[in-house]
Image 1 (cartoon, helix red, strand yellow):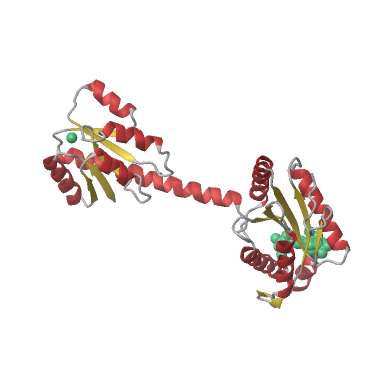
Image 2 (cartoon, rainbow, N blue to C red):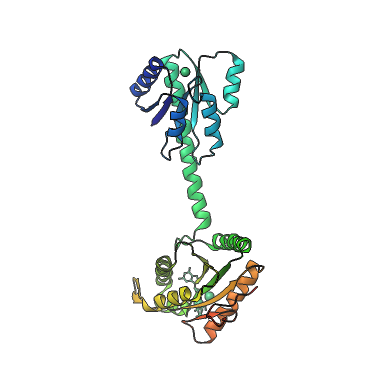
Length: 312
Ligand code: GH3
Ligand code: MG
Ligand code: MG
Ligand code: MG
């Protein structure tokens, strides 16, 4: 593990680095507060830090306060190094955010042991962060297709709707439903149906742009959300998706199979709620199905210049 040391005193710095290296640590040496502060703001900064209190330019206490105000996802473990033995100073250091302190001149064994505590803490934090990330992924993604799940895509829709409301721009949603999917299950089995769902997820991934988002809202239904800059037509994205799905075969254990999608599109400028938008998209989907499937239908009118008149 890497340890950053910030110590202006050469003798003390050499001694610190020596003990740490001897105990298997990789040492990043800095010689004053501003150098340390710069190094600690790098994305790959060491998480274990030994800060001298009294240093030129920026003192250790100020570096400490700045680090704690960073709110990094991966917090630092900081040992404050001080020649101040007074308990009041120790309290100031701990209150400023130090995890531990060490009085100079330090004892090599105590330094090693205290840094070991820090290493264990950093490793525990990493394991916890890793677990939290995995749980967050599981809570927001559909296990079969890896797409955003219903809760996550609807959360996203709420946020996007609030954002376009503030910015007075528009948002389009497409409710996408596989045509005659039951027939695929009935003919080739549920596992092949699952492979079709995964294959479709890949097509979504390839077709949507980075500012669009898609999620599996239920069984064989997917929601595609796309921001619509003023004066642009949102329909080509949905038309293209529909064509790509119909034009590409999906490889399954039962062979290469063709499917088609029906998409109901609704668009809003501002004011509408998530429920109203989804209801409008559902109505359009129903229309696409009843008009023959494998097509896009929109809820609302087209303006003369080809832009979808939004529902408000
Ligand atoms: P339509 O064109 O009207 O949409 O017809 P459809 O057959 O697609 O619609 P229907 O609602 O009758 O059937 C949907 C089917 O989707 C039924 C259900 O078993 C299947 N399904 C839902 N979730 C899954 C899944 O996770 N895996 C598989 N293999 N099938 C699923
Ligand atoms: Mg000093
Ligand atoms: Mg359906
Ligand atoms: Mg269907």
